[in-house]
Length: 260
Length: 260
DNA sequence: AGGATCAAACCTGTCTTACAGCACGACCCT
DNA sequence: AGGGTCGTGCTGTAAGACAGGTTTGATCCT
Image (cartoon, rainbow over all chains, first blue to last red):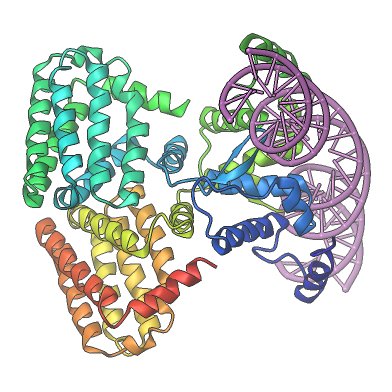
């Protein structure tokens, strides 16, 4: 079991030193990606054990773990105690981490995130209107109805608000839009719920609900242009309320919580 | 130096087992994020050495490395041989990895990526028109001029095409849009260059160049609506050409290369 | 036959110790 | 001033060990 020791030494002599992509950990990463591709692995499928991989490659297990931690951090695999790693489906948490990191180092602020969220959700909603299934249209109508009876229960309202946006993303049929919307949900969910109970039953919330209802009507009607216009109205209203005179302190606290 | 051994044992007894977020590696991650926040570290700033961190936390160095590999994979830090890790600026490579992983496991295809790219670049271009600086407008004009004299040199043309899109993203003033566009550039650059030399000096390329020129004129004129419309025409044309009868084989090869 | 229990095997998370090689700054020489 | 050398700081990796979680198959009971 000495698969790599000799070629690696030779490679080092010929190239005179460390080459980009030549670390042992990077080799493990390449091996695992190749293994996944060659075997057509799909989310939920199991990988070989760390010990097996280490033996097969002649690399020590801690380095295999480092490589796998990298793949886990970018969402390709999922590691768990006592179980072999599995292939993981695309999800929003990775992008959430990336964005939160950027906020942490002061390169991005909540306004940037909100602006991108607005751009993306407006961009995708026409697709949702065009592509939604009957079941998705019915689900959107059900959600907006649940929201209507929760105008005095803001946390409950927010839960359905989240579902509404996720269902819209799902209706686009593009997993990447789903990932983005999921990331936004995770980023904004805390700041939307902390200390915002006072939003219940306000004129603002009633107005937001009307905008939601209009939006869903456009989706049901498969009217992409109307959907785009309705989503614009919805976000412009939400942004004005969120960043207007009343809310900054609350968003500021949320931002700090996001940095902890 | 026994900072964690006792509280960790106590925590384990009270909670009756492993709790989410309670792994040693996760503790290191939390510690480093806190360190970055408390010290206001910015891109380029150095972190303590692995050995120092391990001593400070009473955790073994391989686990510190695992944690740091995770943070490196999500773009917060950058690790290098012989040097302490540094805080890393936001960049597109992370998202590129995420998307390529999703393609690798068959959850996303090139069409999804292109569709999102279209949606996002159209969404952002109005912002670019509104916010661009005089220098950025001049740069865009210079780029489009450089493209005009490279209609018979496709690889050269592509280089400036990339710069054009990156400059537009920069003009939005939103780092998140820059990250997205950078990721798209990296994902599509290979498939755009492999075996596509035959595109040089074709009627298609001339048409694309005219669309580029129209687009830049709208940016220079600070006309957000015209910019949005021009970008739509540009992408609709590009997508029709890319996914039309002539190109599928080439894109298919690029996709396979992406999976290697 | 089906369900519960238990032991063994498989597996991950972490630690310790050690060594090879890279990066950087101080110092010396030309 | 510029280049070379050396020492110190630092990362990348290996080997071996142990604690504890998960899975699987055998056995027993109803």
